[in-house]
Length: 101
Length: 307
Image 1 (cartoon, helix red, strand yellow):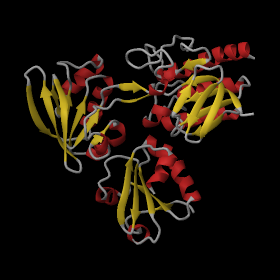
Image 2: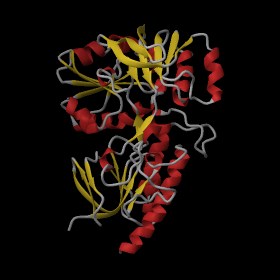
Image 3: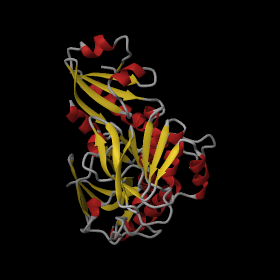
């Protein structure tokens, strides 16, 4: 599965109402560690069809960033049944990201 | 028989991948072990102006990836895995990872350095909730707010200056009564209308609910404590070398750096230390890459003697 780009218009449907667990990568174009984590997020998306993998650009989606109190990028959130069940900040190795799920 | 690499490089920053470019280009079977992603500390820097060859500057992550690709072009393999234990003393060096034990005739240590933490109880828990180590990465989230910078060296001064352009107020907390930063920072910082200083002060507590609300600082000159409101705390008190794995095996100085001169040779033959992890006067990307070339030269010399 490819990574889904989420914005405030499709957030409700794709994230909160998702029937699969959702991994969201909050990122920004000017953030180096975001670039480093991005290929790992892409791989997880390819390798784990049971997870819905999404990316949110915090500069374009400031409302969503504020809603989730994002104060650092990259921030990863795991959302199940509309609720945040796990959160991690900063560049992490892929196995640690997988452990969050 | 288990595979024995000619060279295993631990760490995929500029020093590690430059070592790998040289050793693999010289025909040695080379593996780079990197726990997260290529580039090391460079990935935190969106704009690098002092690495030659890039007149318009270069993005740290891009530079790290290019170094990786350059090494892989000559056959270097990369494995994303964290080293949990090493045995460097035997002729065949063993390196233990969660993905298995690896063997090598020689080892190049390029584990670099990481931001020092204050060591306060709730510090780790508040990372990304008001506590940060990279103003360039997280500063923008504090637009119009009050932030505190802890430290007085060059990177603390640069962070404070950067934040003063975004934030309502910046408070610099420093344990001495003057900045240790180079003079070029003093004037713009002292001139900035929205920068305040708390001299002779250290942080004793981070006050937080779910996120940072303030800090408690202690003034060592006056012996007083006070609480100050702040939305963010940027900790910039220097870097610490990543050498825990090698304690008890290699000679390490009192600050934790692996003792090695320009040859990068450590106290064990066949083991080399490159980049920020080595005792050296200047830690820059160019000096890290230079170490890679030296390590490769002496690793080749070593490998010739054992074969």
